[in-house]
Length: 228
View 1: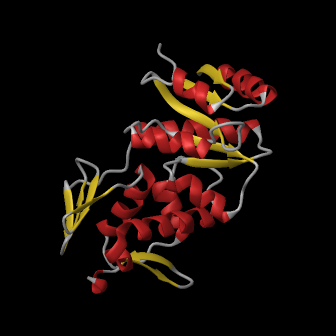
View 2: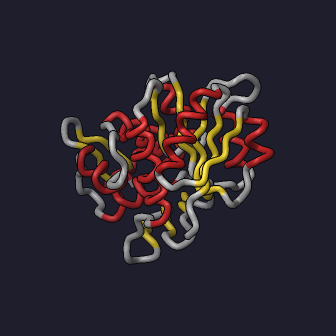
């Protein structure tokens, strides 16, 4: 049996040791790196996930993730950090992170989130049809791409699934709780604030078509075709 390989990146050796011990007990194949620079040297396509500290000596976890995504490396990244403001979360998701765990954390929470993110990548949310199109906006479900006009918009996996969910039922209002159940269905501990952060990032990336994703105060979000 092949066990998922996880790279733990943290300059705190004690945290690495604790995570390595507990995740290995769950059946994962664990490697540790004690800096982002070392992680870049060790990271190969064999790894299924990266647990990544944000604040380290030298290169930060955010910078490392930017480099990975710029090089088309889509390995799932879960940030581990003592920084837990909304702006910190926004930064983490904007550079391509898949999840965000605040320190101090419980081992059970880390294990649950790791399993959930891995499961999401094994079973992506994909509607039956291959494309969803509205005016000059096209969501290609096969290529996992979004095109606005002639511009190809680069979305993270979560952002793509979020947009696809809303666009699959245009003008229907999805509550934050329903969005969590549909997009983060295998991920525990997701809060409504996480949904808002992802919506903010999605709107920014949609640029001139940001108004397509609108909020109905007190109810939730919808794909608003009246704004086309």
